[in-house]
Image (tube, rainbow, N blue to C red; front, side, top):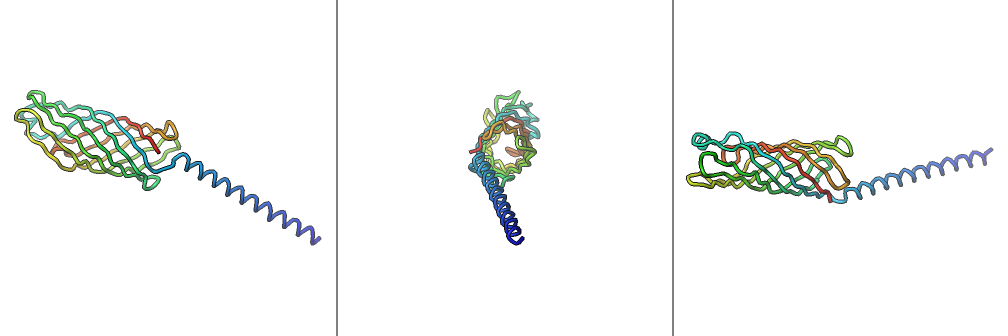
Length: 197
């Protein structure tokens, strides 16, 4: 009887040990798979879209009307400091604000810096929000068109991203730039791609 109990106890301990080893191997496999899918926290991206300009300075609109729509593009790089939080830095061209009755235009370009918070819906789709600063260079061109300006504008954005491959994502985004060049604000909308290293 004693030997039978000893044998059962030995079998129980051995099976528990094998089960724990199997779970450990499964966890290691999962971790290795996650590491292979996303080897680094770095990524790069680019966007192309349109703009709508509001709140243009009355010193301009009292003299002439403006073309409120334009084209915008940007390139950027990001670093995930947490699975849901990233830091981004890039270059954004907000396009031109053309004057209709006067020969002239304004152009806004600059460095975009900010943070991006992501909420994962599933393994293919997530939504995100951005907030940051735009260090712009506002250029005026044309006879009597004033004035150049360099300063900082606040930015916020919302969007969604679809992972169509393990290292690639397609995104759709709205982003707002507040008071670029003193008074005008830019409402931008665009599509883009991200590549994850």
